[in-house]
Image (cartoon, rainbow, N blue to C red; front, side, top):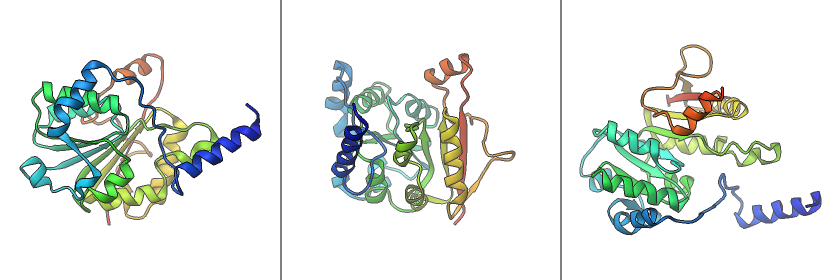
Length: 240
C-alpha cells in the first residue's frame, strides 16, 4: 500500500470516529458457543448499559462496598480472579469486544459470583455517563494497546483528557493502577501522570512499583517472564 493511500485510510478512519480518536479497534472475532451462552444466559443479570444512565451501586449490587473498575479486561481472567479473591469488593468491568464479555459472564455465572457487573462499551463514555463522580476506590488499566508506531501514539488511551476523566471518577485517595509490558508506553504513562493535576505517584523508589498482590499474574505475563520480558506497574493516587 502506498504511503498516500495509507494516509488517506487513516484520515478516513479518524473522520469515522468523529472528533475524538478512539484508543481501540473493534475486532469482534468469532464467538465460541460458551461465550455466546455467557451473553445469552448472564447478560440480563450482570450486564449494564449506557442507556441506564448513572449507576446506583446500592441498587446494582445491593450493598455499599469498595468499588473497583477495570478498563479493557480482555478475556476477563484477572478481573475474575480478583472478584473471587476479594468478595468484599464490587467490580465493574468495561470491554468493547464481545467474546471477552461473553467469556467473563460465563465464568461469573459458573462461579456464582454476585460482585461483578459488565459494560460492553467505550470506557470513556461509561466513566462520563455511568460512574458517579468520586465513587471509585481503584481504577485498573492492565496491558492496554501500546500503539507502538509513532504515528499512532495519539491513540494511546492514557492522555491528559482521559486522565482527568479518571480523576473525576476516583475518590480522593483512590488509586489509578496501570501495567504495561512496553517500556516506551510505561514512560509515556509516567510522563502524562506526572504532569496531571490532582495525582501523586505512590512509588517509594523510582517511578514504578512492584506488582502488587492484588494484580493477578496472567498466563501471558508468565510466558513473557520466561522470555525475559519486563512489566512495569504504575500506581497514582488522587490527591485533589
